[in-house]
Length: 229
Image (cartoon, rainbow, N blue to C red; front, side, top):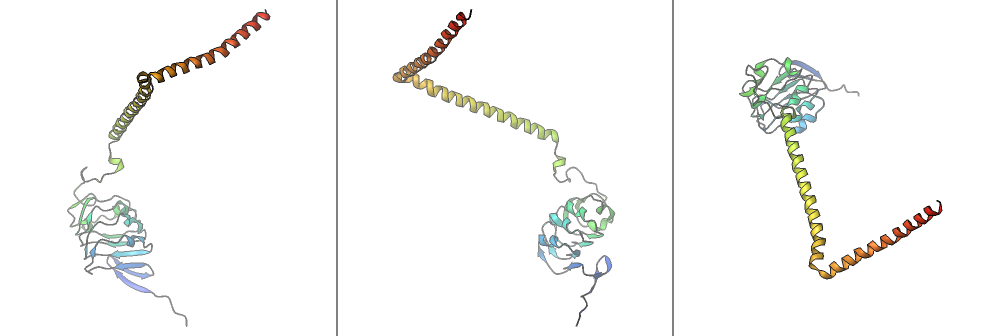
């Protein structure tokens, strides 16, 4: 006997009706505690996620943007804190969002999809939030730290200072090495008479060994030059 595939009809808050095989997680009003598991963001077929009216704490996962297929996201009426992840703006199918009544702060991320969600009530109850579509504008203090917000001249000055210190330490190291080697040899020759005498004899013998072959070659060159005249 052939069975027909299971078909589910679900009513989702903010969406009239859904019929199909998309994944839906609705755990609202379940007295859930703790933080939102990062593993939820790995569900590639998730269509709707509703965790509202619980006691969730911590931050919204930074990789919430991995939920590329989500159209409805409701995290309202919890105790979530921190900023809204920028990756949320990359969910191109997101049409129903509710982050109200949490402890979120900072600027609301900008993005083509979030710009279409112009209802301020979806961010209500988060006194620390700022930016569109809320009436309060963000200041420089509200902006999260990023590489683009760092003054480039400050970075260049720091690099120049580090280079200057590196060069100074290099010069000191070289001078220290030269001084150590120099006095290690000269100091020994000054203190030990026998070593000094042996050193000078070695230098004298070395000079003789070099001088004699050179002198012979010069004399041969002169004789050959005179014979050719």
